[in-house]
Length: 306
Image (cartoon, rainbow, N blue to C red; front, top):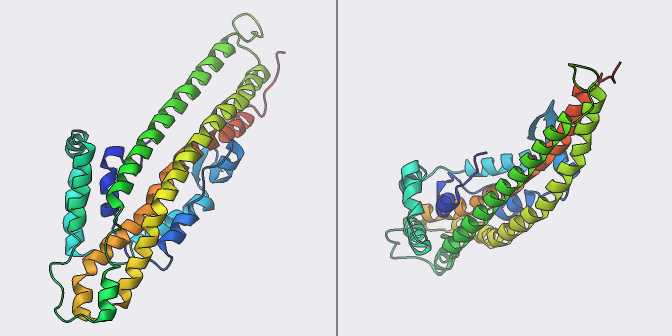
């Protein structure tokens, strides 16, 4: 499954969003993203099951829809467009390879370089005390680079856990196939009864569930770490956008529009980057229950040996 953000390009994520001030605050959007479910039943409740095809249920689709609305609320400025062009370069395979060869210090320097693109070239000579106070609150979150480095670390850990989980789950599936070959045949040249195959398959559902429930708390820990890291970023963005909206000098307001947009991008990135920490493990766990229902459907008319 393609992840929302590649770990080593995560420092670019807040700058990729075409975001803007939203009717709902960024901290509220972050709070709307649910936590990682504790068990497979809770995970299944976050999805809509259409004969085994899982799509996001309201618990996941509503916050995602609100985040998209926030992203689309204000048009990008030229400064943002320039930064986005640079970010898109690093989203290519060649750009990813370039990022792979960077040290953490170089990655942080790149993030800081891109953040500086949001700074205004000049400010009006006559700025009221009121606007000067507000101006200090407009801009990118000071901890952006450190937060994005933290995100990269957490995404790497999440990817490793997903790989381990899938490998362990596949091993269980392999053992089930071996056990199926050992089932008593109904007769010469025939296979086992449908009831025997069904019962074996159902007996493995709790094993897959137990495996899932050893990994879910690990993802919950990663998700909580990002929520705690991202919350100050979202709060700072809320305050920055609110301050910009209160600036009275029209020239200053125009010249700092890119700074405000940068702050908004940063704010909406917080909940956006929270989503994959929840959706990916949740869907993998939900498949355990979806598979149980599939077995029950497939073997609804199962019979024993005649």
